Length: 170
Image (tube, rainbow, N blue to C red; front, side):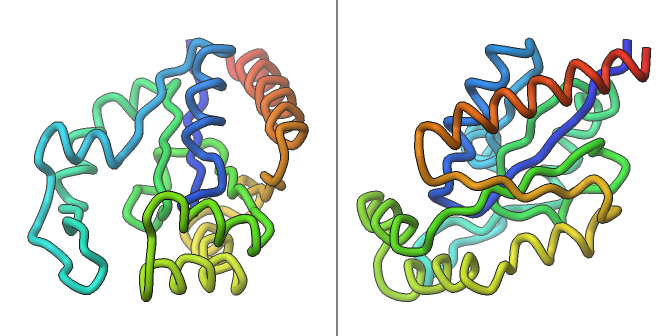
């Protein structure tokens, strides 16, 4: 049976919460790229300015390719232009109010340039634009992610979409 692949983004907008809950409700496989990279040490150096390891994008793609071809995968990452277009049937970009995002990131220990750049990324819709450039615009969707009600609505909407897609493609 064909099962869709999905992706979501921007740090602090609720991707992980949504992705894990979605996997539970749909039976899809949840993959957090940060965890995958850490487990496999899929890094290519260290970024002093942002105080974090640099992802080895080619190794991440190689690591995931077989699983993605099979389908049924939710990919959680804050960027998308490294992933092949053929991997995804739908892309969800979660959007959060900037004040709320600032507070969420601050509580995670983000400071200085890393904090400012991520909030600016949200203000300028960088991730959404990146997604519409990397993939067919018809499969890219923005969803609000500010409140628990938003989370529940998003889950219901995505579960419904998944069930319909699966019905249409099997």
